[in-house]
Image (cartoon, rainbow over all chains, first blue to last red; front, side):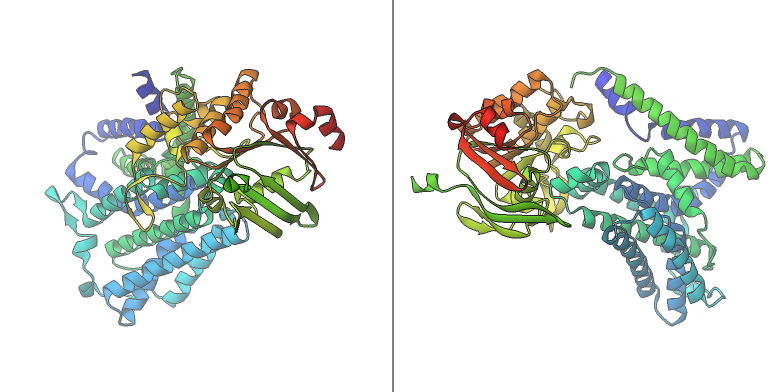
Length: 326
Length: 246
């Protein structure tokens, strides 16, 4: 029993999960019961996949011990490349695959530059943030191309589905991808390598793990997920604006950190990142419903980030201090 | 009997430079089967360099390595492990935020299903085998799910040793395993090195502490300034003599 309590206290996502629960209760009361209603859930869950998918990738990469600040730009670059290709006459699927390949290439470059020249990924991906954003504007030619609605299987990505039309198809994609990445991290040997690489690089190297390749793979997964999320947003909005996703990289980092990921690597969980992203969505939506001035949104996210990290380290210390015979 | 005479590892004329520093200057050494060799020397004598080359952490610049008489190339830690050379490092062989069971199998995870080397971990087997492996080295840990970061230095060293033994190593390199250990834990490690012979394992024990080395090894190799300066069976030398050549 004590062992169980100790293990759960040390779960990185615990603080965020508690905060989420509290906020949901608070907003439910403040909004006179509107918050957990079908109509509002449609809004919350409809937008959630876009940021949460980015958070999933960023969390995975942070557990591997690296950063990606370019996700916000990749979020815009992927749908832009895909839309431009479609206006050039490409079909939806080839254009989508090509767009995701562009993301994979950006991720590959992020990883390769970081590892080959041994520079902090903070710097590499900061550079990539500007480069990818600039490319997005350049290939758009200044005017966002129009999406050909009739060629896009939007039922597969953004249409409302499910009982009571509570969520969009994008939510199912998100769940499927989140489960897949969680399993990858928790249940496969690759996941073990990711954790070891981020947890203590010299040990991972000494045990013969191909750490450079593991990191590159995480960079690529992170970029591809960001691009896919950007595509979901563009399909929902119906137009590929070159400015989407600005500032998203920091929200994604905040989500990962709120969910218990450590900036130093090795600690965190995909579920934590998702809870973090959900918290941010819930605050955004709940504040509007409770008629709080929406300019407080970023303040709340900031405060929450700090609170979650402080809470987490406190809970972990509590857990660690519990005497259970090993 | 000829096979027994054949050294399990031989290095011939090994050289290593670290950007301008000539760290190994033509080292030639034989490690015989079932022998415990104490490798001693001051900081910068080249013993760590020699070990890193054998463990696959650093590539050699010149020279030859033979395992069982066959020339081999050790380009990464995986090659060394596949040749049956396991290394226990002073600090860097465990990930503190991971459980004992996971640490035991880093890079060599048993899989239930796999495609091209990737697949689902066989966690039940990882747990069961780590419990057994740890019990085999006379260490008693109740849960294989405890984080390595919560163990004492000695327990951690014990897990590292259990890991090396579990993978049936032929040669075990222990790099300063007694540093930062309590007296009791040190005695345990020394006892372990002594027991290697009975388990058909060659031990290479690196230490600063002559008393530890003399307590458990059959042979002493002393290095200084990148060269081997002394190589004698324990019975034919003394702490004083070794100290003199260092």
